[in-house]
Each structure stands twice: as C-alpha cells, then as structure tokens.
Picture 1: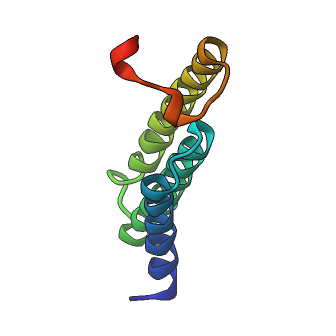
Picture 2 (picture 1 turned 45 degrees about the vertical axis):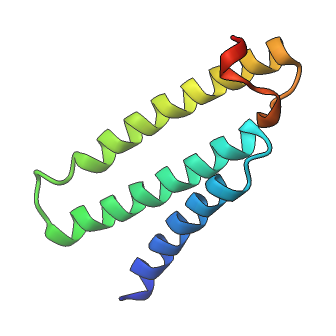
Length: 98
C-alpha cells in the first residue's frame, strides 16, 4: 500500500471512528461526515487520474455535488434542532417525541 493510499484510508477510517464513537454534538457528527466525504473525493480524483479515462473523470464531481447537498441538508437540520430544542446535543433528540 502506497503512502498516499494509506493516508486516504486512514483519514476515512478516522472520520468513521469519530462518527461512531464521538456522538455528543450534531455539529461534530457533520464534521466527521464531511471529512469522510473529502477523503473519498480526493481518493476518487486520484483514481480517475491514474486510469486517464474520460468516463471516470465525472465521478469525483458527482460525489462533490452530493457532498454539497448533504452538507446543506445537515446544516439545515442543525439550525432546525437548535431552534426547537435549544441545543445540538444528540442526547436531547428523541425521534419518538416528534
């Protein structure tokens, strides 16, 4: 495994572990998701450059578009929960009380 592949896989794994184990605030969960998406974007971009094919060149841009949609939806949910519950702590959110 090359050092480049190791750095991207370790950054994705660290983002996944942060999402799984550090679930106190919604903002930290959103930042972990964005870190995971950024590592996936860079890995896909380098993968498309290695193959030098025009068919793979649109894949990173499509992932980046979905990542922007995910970020805007996450921030909208963060603002909505902060307005209704007064905090972004995940322990205070209960889906059964909505």
